[in-house]
Length: 229
Image (cartoon, rainbow, N blue to C red; front, side):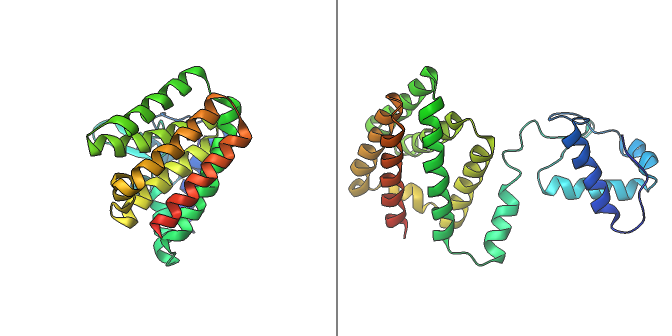
């Protein structure tokens, strides 16, 4: 599975070989990596070097290390973008508006694709989330339902990159804005407006009306971003 490597930038070369094995299909999501000893022998390097490369990939979310069981390729890579995106956000001293603008673009594209692909079951799950947002007296449940509503639209898009990016951006927004988004959802002045916007998005998706879905999501994201600013 692995080839011997030169001494320069050993960590990067090990990581690149693991990524190449994923790309070629030699390694699949959820697969266990060979033991550190087996990898070290195949690569012609020390076990400590292999261990260091694997720990670097663990930090990036590309490998999961399970004590006593070994090292695995994650079954899902949804969380692997959070740390790199969060670090890029901080290093570039980006304003929170930039993340909100990126999320807006992705949400609009997600709803466009969802209007084409959404299933009957996905429409039903959207309606259930909408019902909680409109009728629950428990604030925490309303916030969770709002997250679920947007997450379900992303999943209905069928585009894994959009799903993963929106999942990462949503968590970074919470990280950077310390609950501001949740407070926005819970504020009575905004609650009714947001519920109406969600209802319009739902109605458009239920009818598979792409144009109306795009308009409804655009209006909703513009409203939310104005409030967040």
